[in-house]
Image 1 (cartoon, rainbow, N blue to C red):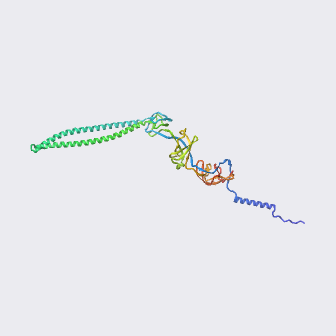
Image 2: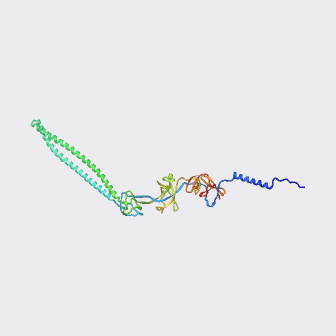
Image 3: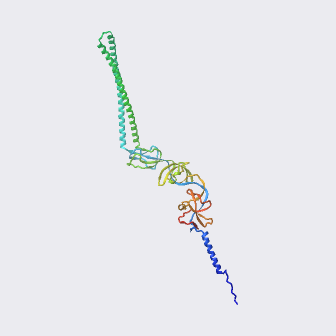
Length: 415
């Protein structure tokens, strides 16, 4: 007789179902609580630039381009205007101080000079005539006074005789009064003649003084006109290289017009163009350096030009210990311009990542080297080689520093 077997609870099917359910629940729990839900992107590691963050000296500088120029450049400006009748030296030649470069012609200047000379000659004649008149007036006075003194002496004698005779009642009153009045008249006339001559002499002296002042002023004008005419012959003010002469025979030149320049080849400087972003940090005396033929040469800023054109301004830099040998005018070279003193800092190499992130975050490579994750950072100063890291990175970590243009918003890059 057959026996009924009890059914087993842990059948293979049931065990399979429970095991599958358990795995499914575990997977869901893992996905919900532990799985990395960040967006990911697979990239080729060979096409990336990975740099190592390091601790070191941060040297704050910028690299600018300088152009070699003469230490002194003398601009030739026309002191007077005129048309060019002769051009003796072409640009590009060496000149010595005093060499004649151009000859100009200006008829109006010559006419003004002749008029000034004529006026000076007229004043000289007027002055001589006035002085001669004064001498003649003095001689005339001496002659008049001499004649009056003679007449006064005669009238005095006659008056004194008549006075005695009148007291003795020898002559009548009329004869006494006649000689008295004649003596008094002549004496008074002498006083008037002296006063008149004194006035005439003072007036003549005043005229002479005025003429002398006018003549001196006119002679100065004559000298100025003569110097102006001399400026029609343009001469080299210094010795050097006549680097340009921008006029031709027959051309008309206006007063103050630039006609060329002379370069003093006894020294050189560097004319440097700087981005206006740094204008507040540039000052006279700021140091820099330049490499030429394998040697470093120190420079310092000696002049700052305040005009900003197309977002840039210019400065002049002078060599500390003389310009390099064989350097030529017009050569260009990179210059390392120091903006601050070196200091210890965490350094991140410069790269294309900055254009997409603005320095606010980077992809940091994990320790396993298989992925890189986005991390927020804070950057400080920058030079052509490194960023100064203020927060978010430490020495030894590896960062992708090439461009992030194709990474989108993904938070994790997998290699």
